[in-house]
Image 1 (cartoon, helix red, strand yellow):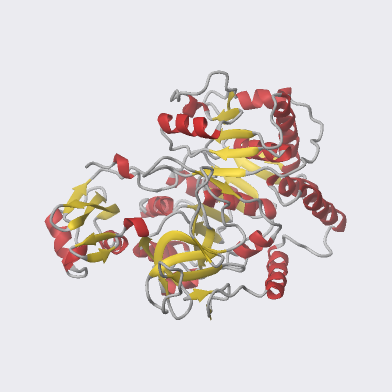
Image 2: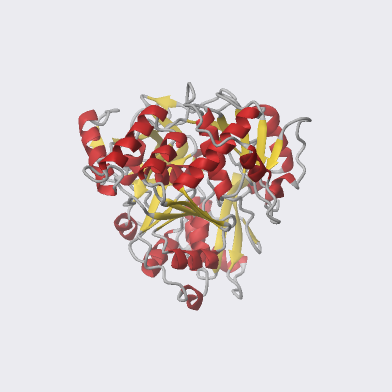
Length: 545
């Protein structure tokens, strides 16, 4: 079965009507304020001209914002706030300083930074030069950083000092500049001071962005992200998530992750103020929302769960009534936590299902989540989903198959030359799922997470959901491990709430009431915390054997 952007069933692999798509895009762009006919005509024309000349790149987007709203706050972090004009000036200086050091069109530059204004300045500067931006995952080990540098061969590395202090093995002569240090010292600031303030010429071709995978189960891979093709990508997300021009968007998920990068680019199109914090702290997040009157929070599920885990009296200290949108992605959020969040914060929760390779595939609204907390939602404007068998044929509605996606932001392949299977314009995500009669997607699990236990195909997510529903449990991860008798079995890694007690025997007894025998974990490990990377994914290699 396949569904189009309306969420309705289609026969075969049918494209969404282009004219309807174009008209819908315009409607959502006007509704959100990205396009505002008749208002500040000279600035709007100037902003459109910047997009036409620079193209819909990060450089073009921020140039358009500088023309349209020069004195509006663009980025706020722990060290202050920059307007769009100030950010543009600093990006010009940084671009010229890097150009003096040989960076130009196609030159690869590595960025290994937490979320802060310097990261945004560096990304804009590299886009102005047409350079290739390598976004390093900050959770990589020193050995993984060395391997990525050896493979990708950046001409310059810009990194927060804490990552340089880990002393990765870097090539001799590689220029390295610190982008953030706790004592305030910054090689990035020195570069900016040394650069000419002159406007940079438009590069002969736009730069590329390469997102490095997290490497939780294998060597990190570079995924080449395409440049936006105009405002159609923004319209796709805005067709479901009601963000507006001038929003204050607090991005807590790392920008080196596809979800954080998409949020940053969407904020760019909306001329939004990006509110950034280098490290996530649940209470500090609520404090910032209250103090800055944040209107949109961009997060991963584990961050929202940690906010919910704060004592009720702590949550009550902070006025979060300014929030209109809380959007999460990166992993599944337990159904019980979704219901709890909607009860605590109101109908503001939106879930985005996607991947580094596919960008987005489906978005769930507060109404979707209230009705079906386990759904991943429906495809947004310009996106198609197919549930296909292993040969690329649509399966009957309701049957489980591989989830395949088509949209304008599919990745351009890995830097090692590999790609993902394609079926008639739809790319296999590596996940398995099903579609219901309303066109809503349900993700069952990753294909490589499925195990065969006693001849039965089983996925860990239903087991995780059942364990998470237990009141004593704060966090859980379930993985398949080899079993001499059954081929494979599940092992559960469980974190309890402070002061809670639960035995493996009691946990398994409760699971027997709702799960088939072959889904029951045979090993239960109680841990103080799960090892998660900055995007919230469990690092399996760091779990006890």
